[in-house]
Image (cartoon, rainbow, N blue to C red):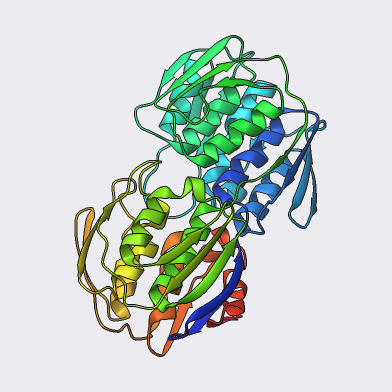
Length: 416
């Protein structure tokens, strides 16, 4: 099992190119199931989760061609309407094959998903929505069985805002008969990116970017070309890294228009930023200011950045408070950060951080994707050596992170 060895205390200087967004790429890849035509995708990141999704899609009979960051999908020969447990167990996004398979082929068998242990994230909203569209759904022996001759449009109000639920129901509704209205829809940029691809494929969707999506079903979709949006979470993670270590970095291939909440908090931290259309130059020469925040759905502060900002808060000049409202188990990194000398206490869904003068390197263990990124940031800022175990979590969502950090001066290496 790979580990990362970090010797902290190095300023970060140089250029970083941000990859395509994991959370956009995964549903967009599933959209290839909706058509017999070619779906040509660019800016697809090199991630373990992407590889898993391509393997899952390939076993359905979807033809997959990959060349660097370009992926070409062709769904003309799909013959296995199933997502088996062996592939689904490592990645919750696998549930996103359910809607497209059901809408196009009238049936699907999908294992209940696994993934990071950061909360229950039940799939009941997916099931409730598909049932509203006319699907017959049963759950047996860990599998979701869904059938319907033809989905029919409906008004769906989810009990909670769910990103993957919105994406699954949006894809299903594109091929349903009549009009579907999705109320309380997630507004995340990754949902918008999926919707833009679906429109390019011939779907009729209005309200894109709002919490009310209206879909007029069409008989079939066709092929299209699309470039996956830049990963706002990866970009903000690198900005947190320079905020914690000091330095001067420039990020390329960014989408600053979808990063407002994180950028506002980075300014509070004291990070000096020069922002152009697709680049961010970030400079830091002082100890970070503490920032208090509360995670919430887009356009609020993203839960996927909570751990990384907490890492910066551990060495900030003062006390801060972080409240997590999205996932109930997303403080598992706290214990590991405290091993590095952080002073964090938790009470329910709130963490109280007292900034310390210096973190000190130690062996730590990654518990989930974003927790692993936060430990990298903490290790970069710590004195001495930090050894991070279980970095397979990191590889699920960051494209060669240690290589990008090495290029800007970090003393970081992967140990096989």
